[in-house]
Image (cartoon, rainbow, N blue to C red; front, side, top):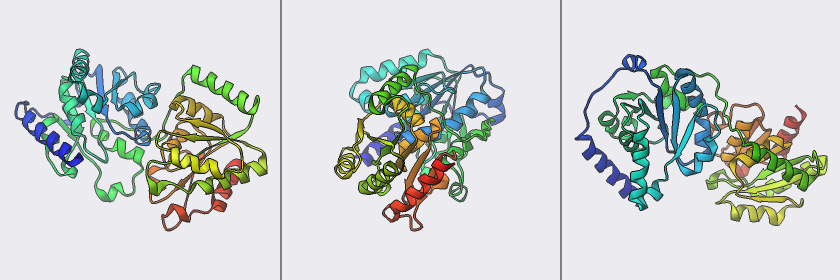
Length: 367
């Protein structure tokens, strides 16, 4: 079904391109434009991917200091970016919801066009979103900018964008941190950013709610660790029993309390963790991103897999031990020294021992 959907969207895009003006501009011409209203579209559906793109938004804010920056994001990432200091406004585009409601889609497009954007930039890195490209056209922005589609096997970008941005070659990509990968195409339009840290800012209400939660669960100033045993990808899941063993060892050594966190797809893994946990945890199911960020910021330590929770830890500056499987930490671990990756030599997450995680936690707590 996904292949059919992609083929249909590609065919529709090719048809629409027949009616578009083929005007091209250079990066030098773009640099001379007055951009007061900038639209950025990033539709990827992974929270970690969006947080890894924050350095790119930091660079865009520095490059377009006077512009109002509006971001179009998928529903799952709206809360991640709503309080971001480098974005003025976040609009939510729910692809499935809008496809079911043509009137909703029409209202969304009319809202975009009514904002009269000077330019739109589509941020694509590891995949090419035809939907994002079509939204760029629908926005009515005077200038459309986006990454080349050639590495993904077609020439749609050349048909739709006034200015195409380069992507790194495979050899460069293998050595490139994901934060830098998001910045790479933007360098062509003068965006420079060396700070690869992410950022997430909880609301004041979330901060206060978090304080009350901690006081009720562990007492005023209670010390606790956060454990998130889930992950969207099976190969990225360390066995729940090992999380339980590591948490129990830290509890026995320091007396830390325990908060167990699960997301919408973590039910089975969280149940398995709770079944074998020797420490009675406080359980949080599907907390808001802002509340979770506030909680992790106040925790002694977070134990998790290579997943979105790890990126929240990096975004709020929390101490975190992240267990990695086949993914390369040099590319995906947040750059913060407070986030430490533990990985086995063979890239198999089940080869990671409880002892190695505890050792890494002790060193991080000691520092």
